[in-house]
Image (tube, rainbow, N blue to C red; front, side):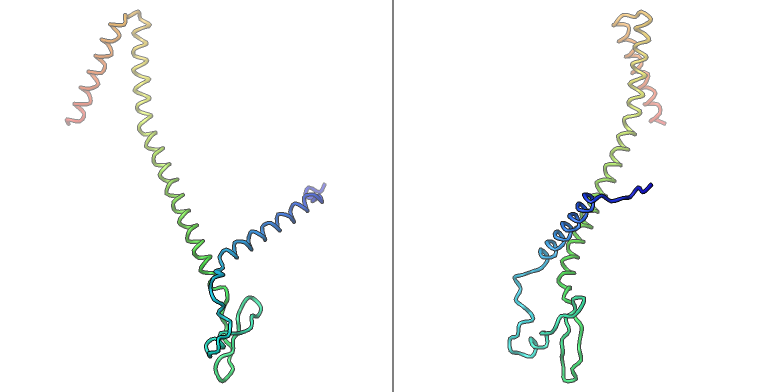
Length: 165
């Protein structure tokens, strides 16, 4: 049984997705390009501009002939694109650092809440069970309040003795 048979509909969807991704990539590249810069390869009449003027070869390299011996030098046209990409990457790294920091802060706050909440919950359950024991044994509300006041007074004395030593 063939599990990975691609239907014609799925093939069209995949091709459409690839086309959209390519269009989005081209839009991102065009956003990185600074179209307001003057054309560096335009001839202005001086030797420097003539030396910069060259032919674009494969892989986006501009080859220019300079000097008397006719040596060709290689310069990439993607230097400006690389700086734009580096800026975008720097922004992504900053975002990721911030996200990791907030994640760690959230974990630390959650741990602190557990450290505080668990003992408080244990104390609350103990006090409730202590009061319910008195109520089930038939104590009046005044007797329950006196018992709870005695419990809190004993607890205060225990804590005072613990921190005094």
